[in-house]
Length: 290
Image (tube, rainbow, N blue to C red; front, side, top):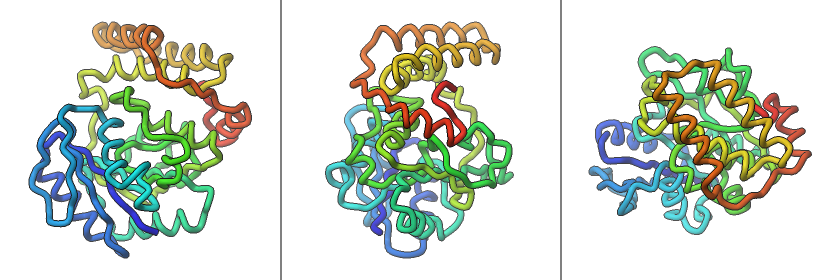
């Protein structure tokens, strides 16, 4: 099984990027072909053999990753699966790529693998980095209904079948959009605790656009993918959860601005999932209302 890797960068973390590239090069088994995408920024110096793509403007996380996918041919078809890795992460173990190959080869229904993210100093995995509701034990691998955007592997056949990441999302929830479409097409997603990406502990709210994008894209996600009766239920639950978390006044204002924007702007093509997919998500522990 031939693997490629897509890494997007803003060019502002050259040392971390180099450490990540070195960790990819040290993976056991066949060489992984790597593409580094400069997302509206020049790509720092990279080792020989690493391909680069420099975009004239910042297309956001999904747009940048989609450009990296196409560097491997239409829908990434020049390889069997693609690793998507954050440029400030690092693979601490050398068998991660081989574990990916083995997992995909052993399970023809497996379309996406979500890695465990761990802090390099403490080894702690944040609860939000375990892509399931029962997240208290990050060392337990399981089937899941979504995946982590900067630490995963995706079969290129999944992308060819259901399409790429939703570029207009720019940031937030693009992984769940792809995950729902993959599950609706019959693919499965695994969270694997033994496949690790080291990444410094951070808060998602460090991004200035966080509250607005999270709310807007949540609405777009529902409008694009959910059966009509579930759209108000899903968004009502998230509205309630947001209020219960008691964000600051400016954060709540930004959130409601994004929520309105999600309803008033185009979300892309609507392809509601089948009701049997709703049941599949429910059986996997996360019905698409939360």
